Length: 296
Image (tube, rainbow, N blue to C red; front, side, top):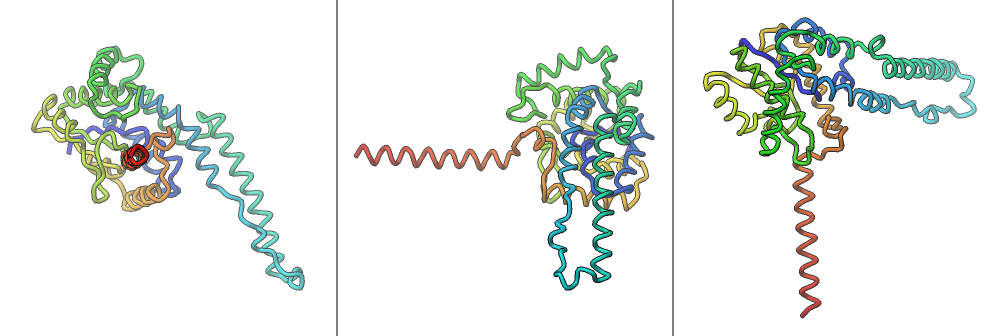
């Protein structure tokens, strides 16, 4: 497919959550080498830089000091050779943990020098290609006008409690780039704003799908995926099996311990909201029943 790729902010922040080592970070090289295929904006840049430090601190909190008390040996074994080795390893691990925390501190304080993810994305955000809605791009005023209109009408992509135009700006920019380039679009996101997951695959929101065909072309394709490696593959950018597997492993980790942008911003997923709503209905019904009972 002759595609353009829009990468949502939550996907970029995943580079700080990933537990895949060099294989996972190698996806950064694909971003760095294909600016011409990536739709981005100053809105994505702002969201990334606004939340980067918070996500790093989340990752730092996951690095726990081992429970050395659980390795304490009884007195009669205190001088045994294995116990001596454990004590030496304990000291080395403690030293290395301090180094890791010092490294993370340097990444927080001076990202342009010490953060490899930041450096790659900075080059993406500062490129002067026509698919980058930077603050120097004059068309940004027209895109913002259209975004304000769709926001007032309640059009997706938009969170229920959102007071920002961010998602609307990004969608209007995607539409513009699709028209201008005459290319198909791949959106990489794990936000429910763009669609719902079913059988471990996201499905694009009905209105967004209809709107894309109406405003762009019925013949053109728009695909929603939650995997950056899959988006590259759909765009004929060579990705390895290791990269595909590493991102799948990351998504499995996130499902077990959610750390999406919505969690960071304290935005509750739709399912949680629905359960809370049902619970409130139950409480209200119970309260009404109690009032009725006392009245009789």
